Structures are given as C-alpha cells and as structure tokens.
Length: 522
Image (cartoon, rainbow, N blue to C red; front, side, top):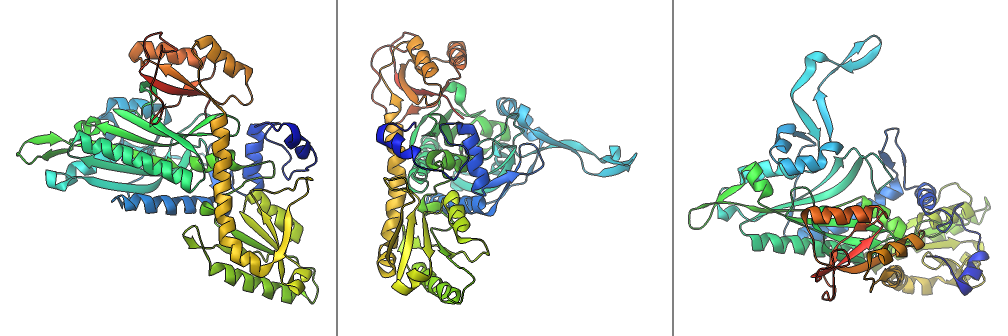
C-alpha cells in the first residue's frame, strides 16, 4: 500500500535495490523481483519458465512441508502418466469443455526429415490422440474403477506431485504458466458425508499451511457456481490479498460427487450387497503459491522469504579482502555456521549457509537481501577480533534514518537468540500481511453503482469488498457476472467465517442468504 506521513518521508530517504518500486509499476516490480532474486527466467518456450535454484529451493520447502501435512491426514503418494487418452476426457462432457481450450495434444510418435526440416511422420500418427495432463481426474478415475470393488476398499486417499500443462494465452511467471508444478489429491468415499468432510479437511490443511508456513493470511470459503471446477458439485478456495489489493486463489478443494464416478464407472458393492457410485474429491496447490509469496511479502529491495520456507534461513557473508586475515575470518564463519546448524528453530534444524563465492562482499550482501534470506550475517576482521557479528533482519531492513539496519552484536548473544529471531521474522511477516488484508476489506456497500465506483476510484489499490447476495444461479448469475466483468471484477468466495447475511442482495434485491467477496484478481 502507498506510504503516508512519516513512512513516506522515511521512504524518500532510502535508495532501494530494485530499479522499479511497487508504487511505480506493480507488474514490472513483480518481474524485477523474480529476476533480481534469481527465482526464474524465460525458457525459450512461450509461457514456460526455468525455475532457478533459489526459486526451486522455495518450492522444495513448500513441497516438503505441505507433503508432511497431506501424509498426516492419511493420504499416500503415487504417480500417474503425463499422457491421458482423449477418450477419457470425452466421457465427462462438462470437464472436457472446461479444459478444451487449454489442452495440448500429442498426435504423432515420430519425426522425419523432409526438405531439410523435422516434421511429424505421417506413418507415425497415433490411433488415439493423447492429451498432455491438464489435471488427472479422468485418468485417476479410471484407476479407481479398477481399484474399488467393495465398500471395504474405501476410502481411497491418494496424492501426486507432478507437472501439468494448460495452454494459457496470457502468461506470467509463477502465476499463470503453460507448464507448472503442483500436487493434486484425489479421493473416493462411500458416502456424500465422508466426501464432504474430506473436501473441507483438505481446505483447512491449505489454510493452515498458507498461514503457518508461507505467512500468508487467507480467507477460506466456497466458490460461487460460475467459479466451480469443471464437473464439481462444490468448489472451495483459499484467497489471499496481494499488495496491490488484488486477490489470488492460492489453493482449491472440490467435492466432485458422482460426476467422475459415473463417467469412469467407479462403483462398489455396499454392505447390503448393492452397487453404488463412489463419491469423489480432488484438491490442489501449485507453484502459483510462489507468485503469491512474492506479492504478499516482497518489498522494493526484492523478496522477503518467511523462515519456514526459506532454503537458507541464515546466510553468512565473510568480508574478505585478499589479506592474510582472510583465513581467520573464514574459520570464524565456519565455526559460526556449525553452531547455528546445531540449533532448532520453528521445529527444524537451522539452515545456515556460508557464502564463499568469489564475489565482492557488498554485492553478496545485497544479492541475499534481494533473494529475501531471513537473516544475513556479515563478518569482517574487526568482528573476528571482537567476537562479534553484524546482523541484518530481512523483515526490517532500514533504520528510522533510512540507513541499512545492520546491528553489531556479540556472536554468543546472536547464537542464543537466532532461533527466536527466526520465529519473530515468521510472525512479523504474517502480522504485517494480516493487518493489510483486514484494513482493505470494505463492508457496508449496498448498491452496485457504489461497488463499481469504489473500484473505479481505487484503480491502484482497490482492496476487496464483502457484500450481501442471494446466491443466484443459471442465467441470472450469468448476468451478474457480466456486470462485474465490465469493471474487471470477480467473485472470490463466500467466507466460511462470514457474519450472517442481513438485508437485500446487492445484485438482485432479494433477501440475502450469504456474504461474498468481490475483488479484482490474478
């Protein structure tokens, strides 16, 4: 959000590491963070990216921490093929219609040279086209139909970590790419009640993970009819507010009912000996979470990574000058690294890196600041002589006078406090984002013109609006959606913890039954 008053004066004194600020151009700032923090780069294929080690390290942390939570709920990991027969999709009309425009299709299995160019061999045309996995409900449903015969085989609780391909027209790194990484959970149950409990349980897993690990406050709730996953009976999401006031759907959980069971023939014999269709669910979270991390916590000096998901929580930068004392500085840093590695913070051993790359120490320092390492330690000859370290906390980079906040403190004191500092950084990032979200959700808007004006007047930082609505459906809902589109607005979700609706629906004038969030979104 825009700086005001004393904060604005302080900001004016600071020369930031990035060439563009959030206030100047949020979209360009986002790209600058990705580039300057060595997160990812273009790959040469439109809409696809190379995820660099720091960006992939964050994904590995997300993967590990989320996988632990998924396994703790009784799910097992497995893997399904990248290629899915087209006929699998054709069995479920609504699902295939929802993804048809995004599907990449393989039609040949061999290339030949022709006129000096490689072209598909006409003799190698596949009998049936194969779709490159956009999601796996159909192929996993086919497997479930083989695995499930009796009520004793249920529930089936599986998860896979994979890549998927959706041929997006407008792409942006991490947020919307032609290929991305994710996990997708799929389950089958004997009853509607069990499947709905599973759907909400996994939504809560996502909420806890986002808030506890990524330090990203979210609102969990049900999507309206027009935002449901193709083929779902109900879709639920966690929605996060980015620093430009837009919403990001950070994870989804779907109750699929018998839609895919009917199409894929997932039937079981119940305890009374009768055949029933299984009730299924699916849920997923992707590398889009990294885009959310950037836009939730990044500042005008680059990324800020919450300690729980930082590949390295403490980075030690020795200030070497090609002098005889360099060896003593390196030894001092190595012993400090070993001390830190013996500590436990946030439930795990502290991850400390000693950066010995042959790069000027000030460049290394700013490189790690831009990457968002939670704590950067600088050690020079004077620090070694005095038994000190110079500590930079990434969550509060500058002093009141606008200068870099690099505090010199006894090494022993820092080691004693390091775990607490990491916990403090994790908490401070969450509280900062939470306060921003709370301050920018508007209520009490009762007329559509007032809603539209609110967003049109706040082009740069619009925030969200929570309004009453009567849950229209079908053609009536389509008309409402078109009115919102004219102002670049979308429905996000109906918050699970929203206050009871009172009064009339903003869109239809009928008595309201729910409260729903409206926002601009990614």
